[in-house]
Image 1 (cartoon, helix red, strand yellow):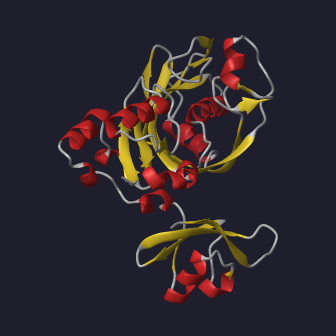
Image 2: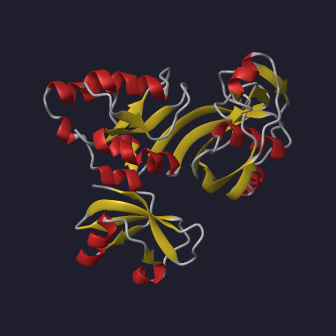
Image 3: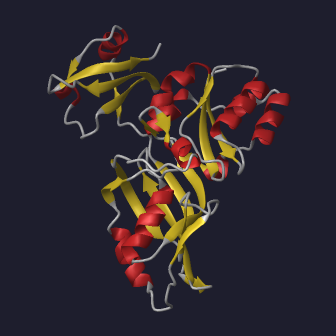
Length: 301
């Protein structure tokens, strides 16, 4: 039993809850998820089973796509709809969609974010949410993230001195969509928060093909798990692919280093998925100390 499951995480479950439940359904301990979702967030949760768990690090680092809603007019301590309101700012009906779209464009590309206090980021050995629950505010280091695309997907509506609209964003690992909503609102001059969120894609897995735990259990009971268990190659769908020859494949299996020029002109990526006869056999990376050299990051048996 080896492969990737496209799980639909329902609201109220932690990502760890999903993995724990699947261990019981599949009767195996070798399971891990490819990117945490907050309990209130729904959507695609890639889950690796069996030997595919060796590829979890690539699943976690892959880009993700989210769809959600921004509410401008008040902010919360958790930066989402679950938290206590901490600031309100009346939003005039004159706030235009053009202003919002212009502000959105400022956040496309590489940006810096300060992680929210209610997050699992560690500072001095403790999770930020542990400080937050104790009523402590600590300095949080800014981190670079990449917003590949960010667009408004609905008209702006006004109600109770608040403005709301939906959005779609494609982003790198480590991006806090909650913080993106707060920072966008601040750029417009108002308090705001993320009022809804769903992950619609990850590792090439789409939400319209995602299965609930109940649906997965039904496949298992009918002895049809293989129908929904996707190949391990899904885990590296975000990495540039290099197809190798017979001779190169033999060298890969013993961990040989290669000159980049052997594969033509490579893109700016740091890691590459090596395929042989349409099967993943290794992930190679640019050598950190020797320019122009590729070294094995992980060889797959």
